[in-house]
Amino acid sequence: MSPDPNEEDDIMASHLSKMPATIAKLAMLIHLLDGGTGPITLVATEKAAKWRVYLYKHAKRIYGSGQVGTTQLASRLGKKLIASTIKEPFTAREILRPQWSGLTDSKLVEDALVELEEAGWIKGTPNKPATGRSTILYNLNPALVKK
Picture: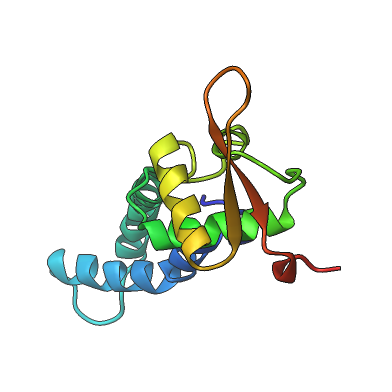
């Protein structure tokens, strides 16, 4: 049984909302491939339901693996930043800590941050401490924060 779509991120929830139609079509194909005629059989429907579990696992792996485009990750990150309790200014490293879906790789996080900055959602400011490595501190665009 797949999880409640309300608990999934937006992309996965959209994918899961299409699953009932996919299973119905699979049941019809399985029925025909098994030589069936007339109404779709319960056996064909049960086989299609088993495919649902398989397809869900693969979708979960694909959407969570960073195969999602940078724009989609940036959108996901922007929504997370607006809803989160991450204090400003924040760093890319602080985005990695919560291990949000699709945002577990430093390169992907950096790409998403660049995209958000280009879209005007955030502003990055280089910070060169007296010792240690320099980093970029980010602040959300105040217009995006609900008051």
